[in-house]
Length: 380
Ligand SMILES: Cc1cc2nc3c(=O)[nH]c(=O)nc-3n(C[C@H](O)[C@H](O)[C@H](O)COP(=O)(O)OP(=O)(O)OC[C@H]3O[C@@H](n4cnc5c(N)ncnc54)[C@H](O)[C@@H]3O)c2cc1C
Image (cartoon, rainbow, N blue to C red; front, side):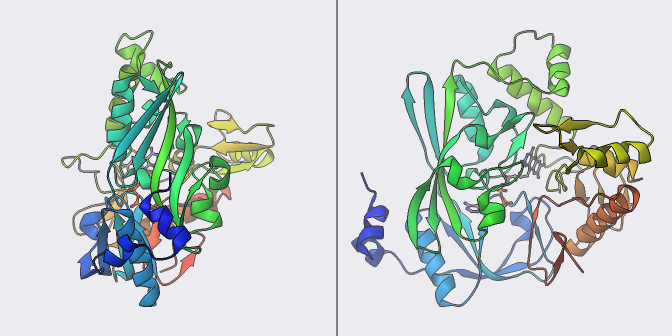
C-alpha cells in the first residue's frame, strides 16, 4: 500500500505536506563536530530531518533559495573545507527498523538515520548472516549504498534488495532495485553516475537466518584461530572483525589518538595486469599483494602497500596532519589540524605513489566546499 508520501507523489501536494511545519534551517552550523575527521568550517544552513516530509521540504527549500543541498550522515567519509560549505546541509536522521521473515530469508529494512553498526549487531544477534564482516564500520545506514560499503570480503551490495530514495529530479519517492543502484567496488550510481540526484531514505538487506558466517580473509582466519575458534558463529566473526579493526584504529574510539580520520583515504586501485607486473618489478617484489579480477585482465592492488613502498610510513607527521600510527591508508588529523593540512598530506601521498609507481590513487572520502578539484582531490 502507498504511504502518505507516496500518495502525495501521485496526487501532488498532500494534506500532510500542507500541514508540515515550515522548514527553519539553522545558520552557520560548525561541521567539524559532525564529521569524524573533525576539520573544516560551517554549513551556511543546516537542518536535521527525522521524517521523510522534512527531507522533501529541505529539497524544496534549497531549490527555492538557489542553494546546493548536501546530504550528511555520520560524517565518516567526508572532508569539509576550512571555509565551510555554502549550501543547505541536510542531516538525514530518520530512524526505524522493520523485519520480514520468510522461510530461508529475512528482509531487514532500516531507515537511513539508523547507526550502521547497530543494524549489523541486530542481524548477528538474530543469527542472520550477510552483514557480520561489516561490523564496526562507522556511519549511518543511508550512506551504505553510496560507496557500496565493504570490508573483509563482504559488501552491502551482496545483500541489498531495495533502496528507498527521494529522487530530487523527479521530486518523487521511488524504490530502486539493486540493478538500478549500479553497484561496483566502492562505487554506485549514487556516487558516480547520478551524484546529487537521490536522498536515501531506507535500505532493505536480505539476510540468511541460520546462514554460515563469511570468513574470506586470512587476517580474519588468523584472528579466529588465535582465539582457538575452528567453526565460528556469526558472533565470533563479528568479535574478530571488531578486534582486527580496533588494532588498526578502524573503529571509532574517543580515546584513540588516531581517531580523527575517514578510515581508508584511498581506494585500492584496479590496474591492467601488465601494469601490475611492471609495478612489482619497480618495487623489486614479486610477492606484491594483488588480486586478479574475474578474467584476469585487470588486477586489484593494495593501496596501503603502494603508499608504504612509496616511502610513506605509519605515524608520518606533516604539520598537524599525517598518517595513522596503525594504518598506512588512514590520513589523520591531529590537534590543531585544518582541512588544508589533511589535503596537503593526501596530495603528497597521492603524488608520491604516482611518481614511484605511475599509479594515481583515487580518494575514498567526499570533499565539501573546496573551490577546485583535481583528480578527486582539492587542488589547493
Ligand atoms: C575509522 C573508519 C573506518 C572505516 N572503515 C570503512 C570500511 O571498512 N569500509 C567502508 O566501505 N568504509 C569505511 N569507512 C568509511 C565510512 O565509514 C563509510 O563510507 C560510511 O558508509 C559513511 O557513512 P556516513 O553516514 O558517515 O556518511 P557521510 O560521511 O555522512 O557521507 C558520505 C557520503 O554519502 C552521502 N550520504 C550520506 N547519507 C546519505 C543519504 N541518506 N542519502 C544520500 N546520500 C547520503 C553524503 O552526501 C556523502 O557523499 C570508514 C570510516 C572511518 C572513519
